[in-house]
Image (cartoon, rainbow, N blue to C red):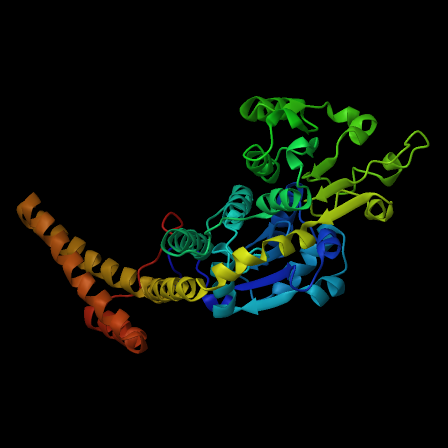
Length: 430
């Protein structure tokens, strides 16, 4: 008998993860999954009857979460859309299945797998990614829904009940700390931030706490977005199309854009009129894939820093956070136990539903006889009957949940005792 909703067990849950642990920033950039790919990806895996899957793609990781056993085919569909070879993807990917995959999701959501330990920006990115994929689907996947909701809940608990996010840091925070540590006169430096997405906004918010707003300028391809952020933090704006001609006016340039290729080029810094060269230009590339040409780092007088390098500036904070890991892991363990209890109970839903439908069928037959004989059925009797059915069903459910090995035996026994056939589930209920 089919369950009321599509159901997937932890046994079929899998994650294919490419992260900073095995791939540097340049390699990770090749596997980035952009929002525009979402609809095509969902359509493709459904056409091939590959179940459900969604992709989380951030600066530190790209991960495919799926509820199908044939996760290699899901990965192949992903690779064809992104434009990479499956063999190349597999060579960098960690593949986890079952309980290990679920544990990985909870650890990622809780900041335990972040390149900067305790970085909770990832949970927001997971929620957004899952929401985008849900919009493209025609039916719910209750397993994924429950898994994501549990990940959100455990992430909140860890953030509130442990010190793993104390001295809160992130890519944006690390960028600001790097500038403050490298430049003793940072307050006197001119800064240009390119990009006003989540990381860009966080970077600006951190900068204005330490550096005068009038020393900071922002630019974005969409001028309206740049204007809103500039008004919020009272910083200057630069038209996006004027970046190239004005970039040498800034001591520090921070790139936090989502382009698929570099937007800052080395020839912008190589000009005959550039004499003498400033003592030091600093460029921080917070983008994945890299949005600044790597060759810029070879030009004398320019310091180019990427995401991987930034993590080295916050080791003291990380050492303190590591002491909080056992507390976080204990909360994750509790969440895993509750999830497995839910999963175990859901496996019993078909039998419980069938049992209740059989009782209701008996009730309907008896009420029909009463109505036929007396041309009347008392409402109070009907309400009492409904309560009795629910009470008996609850006892049946409690027994098979506590004795899962006897589920099928008990369900079959009651069916034989009640002399009824399994009720048919209509398309409306399915």
